[in-house]
Length: 378
Image (cartoon, rainbow, N blue to C red):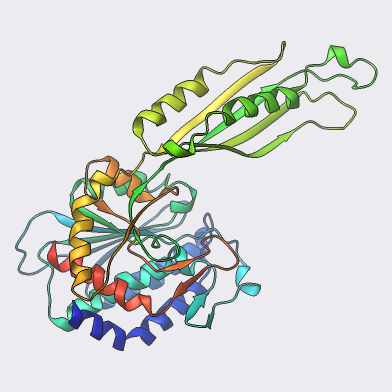
């Protein structure tokens, strides 16, 4: 580990340059042309390193499947590296949020979530090659194009590759702000509630109307009581709309509700509660759609891998920490299939999805050394 770290520290400037190149290539979710352009550049980088690369076409942007097969393979079952190409930032964000280096940090759209992770993966393989270390198992990297929007086009691919894996290492960013490894994540879902009422003049005949906005407000108040932070349950109505004019009783209203839960049992209970909802206002109709789309990533699926990572980190006097986080990732999917999964192996930084998104440059070599150590020892 010490040798790997020293080598990577000597190549920190190269890592920073590659990071700048990736960040300068904006890749908003759903922007196929821009994501495909980044995928092509990343594919070229992996091919330079001797990998077999397949670009898998998708309406959301091409997914990249990268494979290394060791010549002297000593163990069966692949190790899977997992991450994504897309970011939450719309095209043109670079004009107001350019890539920049300041006070030992790199700033820019997607630098933390998760283009820093793409750089760390490449650097880890470079370090192993320079050290003459060949992995014992086949390595597969899957970089998908739609993680930020739910991985709907890539989920089948992720699950297929996961089932062939002994372990999954996720290059999502580390837990903010100190860089802890993510050993547990909440399950994530979304509910849409739609209310249909009846329009009427709000001054002349309000009694003839059924106010959909009022009904929606009552329902939001009801489900908000299901929040339970101590148990890790979140029910947040974050988007709402309804009505047409101020003098018309609202005939329609709807909202989108973000769901989070740490336990599978709580996920099932929440979904049952939403399906059992009935209108409160006489004459209103209520439609509820959706549910959880990412199961929780439970710590038991990361425990053994984290213990190994912690031991490797101790070799370079690094007291590696772990964290449970509320956000979901594709690691939720792999852990739910029973495959040991370690998440948050990417960059150390803060401000994900914000104008101040940044990473700590000097942490890149250490994160790459840890990843290289895990790849070599699994």
